[in-house]
Length: 87
Image 1 (cartoon, rainbow, N blue to C red):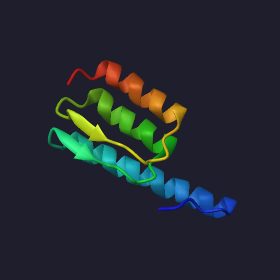
Image 2: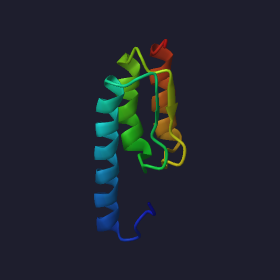
Image 3: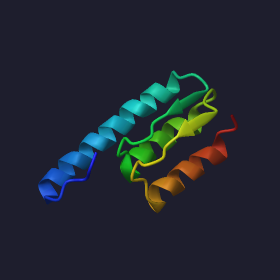
Image 4: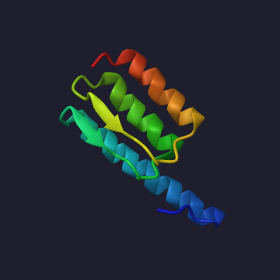
């Protein structure tokens, strides 16, 4: 999915990506030991939602997040969550 150029469209795109990440976070809570979420344009907002789920999840052992437009902020949230996740 390619990012849009128009600012209004970009906000809609970002909101959709965050919603997808929220759904992904819900799925993580009920998942098997591994999941691939690559190429979903999750972004930093979505990564923050995933981090909330990862911090409390006790079953997930592998999560593939490549090509999701996650920047330093989102990566930091995920790393912080993984400090608390011992699985």
